[in-house]
Length: 104
Image 1 (cartoon, rainbow, N blue to C red):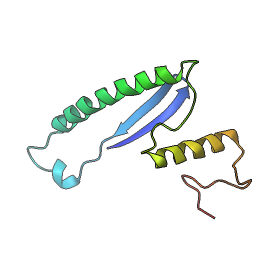
Image 2: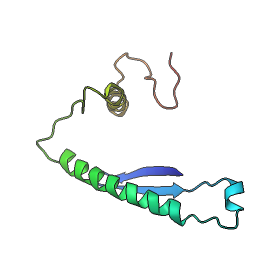
Image 3: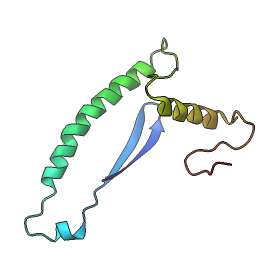
Image 4: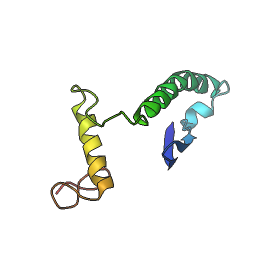
């Protein structure tokens, strides 16, 4: 399964899913995507609720940005990269590396 998420506004996004099954599986007489979809729905509806609750918290005027957990250094690095890229001023004065860009 592949998922694309496009932000539409600060409070909404457009989500599109693409389900990819190997041709040998879909060729089977008893193939059904229903079990796969049911499992995905169960897991993701729980995630969506948590994401919505988090978004509401981030929208609170009392929220201040910071590292979510000291156990998740990579998440903090990605957050810092996004902040630099969206501010338009990388720390090193050059083009910042990130998704789709090569390290110098």
